[in-house]
Length: 419
Image (cartoon, rainbow, N blue to C red; front, side, top):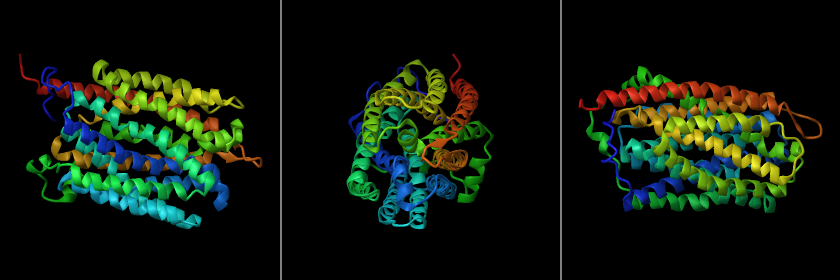
């Protein structure tokens, strides 16, 4: 593990190049997250358009996750053997190809195939981004970095989801995927031209083979808690989000035309929440922020899954607070977990972590699709059951995060010089 920087040695401000890198990575994440997220709010449109059931739609969402999980494991052995910039570009342009296939799909089997291809490449990108972030920034700055990069999630709501829904309402559900291609390809070219190579890890001692590197990373005892934590963290989103629009339209009683407003307001609020959570994580402690986010989540999930017929303003308020709780968990967790792997295994660690997240997410989306039943009038039954499952998982991740925090603190104490 890296020797932790002292408070005096950690830069207060980012350099110009560091700001550029953060912006580049954030925009790239924007396109990746948007592609993954856009399928969820299109559920209320895609299901009747392709004449598929909630179970089939849940499989379309989870197919991305399963294929991403497989590719992450396959890439883990090689993740620390190449320039991270080149690795990023390889998977990003493959991801663009998968997105194009989504924009051209006209049947359910073709959509399923397209989501699998997109997941094979897109699922690895996040792990490479986190490896680059960990290589370039010390732990004491990573909360701020993660907070800024995670605004890609908010930006996808502010700009992407409303625009995607607008394009869908005026053309069809293929249009958002083609729009992602239009902004994604230039983003890849910018990375190619501006970002410097990230090769510091190549000077470190490497295992003899990719398979050995993969096995040693998977079986490392210090990583077990972190792997379990990162696997469970995103399950709530995977279970709730794919059916969010169908729930709002068919259960709450709002129309499709107000969906862009809900995502727009939620996204704008999250743009401010993300960086604030990142700064608070660095200033007050990452575990404390995680505890705060967990409490908000435990309060808001049962409210969200049982709201009934309420005005638009109430739905927006609940959505804003719920996402604030989610970000207050994800950002500090990502920053703290990044301190666990040593530099020579960061790529593999993050790739395996991403794979576990995707597998768990795929299972979660499939389970949610299995639990939820669509009534003859279109409304969803048992959505509250999904909420109870999410709450139980939140409590488990709280216990795991406590132990991970202890592990990181102990390791930092052991490498500090004696007074």
